[in-house]
Image (cartoon, rainbow, N blue to C red; front, side):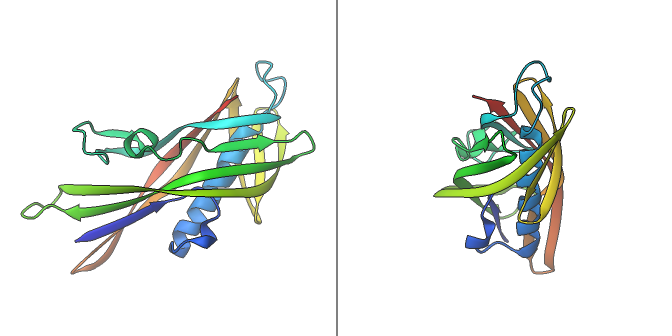
Length: 190
C-alpha cells in the first residue's frame, strides 16, 4: 500500500493535489493569515510587519524523519517550511511568501497492519500569494482567492487551528480511505 501526502500551504494550483487538499490548504492560508492580523493593542504588538512560521503541527504524532522520535511537529520532522513568512501591510493588504512544502510518501511495512516507512521530500519554491486582512480586537480575518478565515493573536504569536486541515488518503486493495486531523499553525513576529 502506498500513500502520498503533499503538504503545501499556498499556491496549490501549480501542483497535482486533489481538490479537497487544495481547498483545505487555501483555508489553512486564510486561517494563518487571520491569525497574523492582530491589533496594536494586543500586548502592544502590531499586526503590521513580517511574521515567520514557527510551528506547523498535526493532531497526531509521526516519525517522518526516521530518527526514532515520534512528533506532531511537521516542521521538525520534515525540515520543510523553515522560511515561510507573512507580510502584513498597514493598508489591509499582505503577502504570503512560500519557499517550500513537504511531499511525504508512506509505505506499509510488509507483514504489519499499522507500521509505515516514510519518505519526505522538501519541494523548493518561491511563491508569493496576495491577501487582504482586517481586525476586530484579537480576531484577524484574512481573505485570499475568495476564501476567508479567522485567527487570534497573543502578543507576538499568531496561532491558527484548522479543523481537519491535514488530510491523508490511503489507497489499498479495498479503495481509498481518508483520515482527517486538525492542524495548528503558529507565526512569530520578526
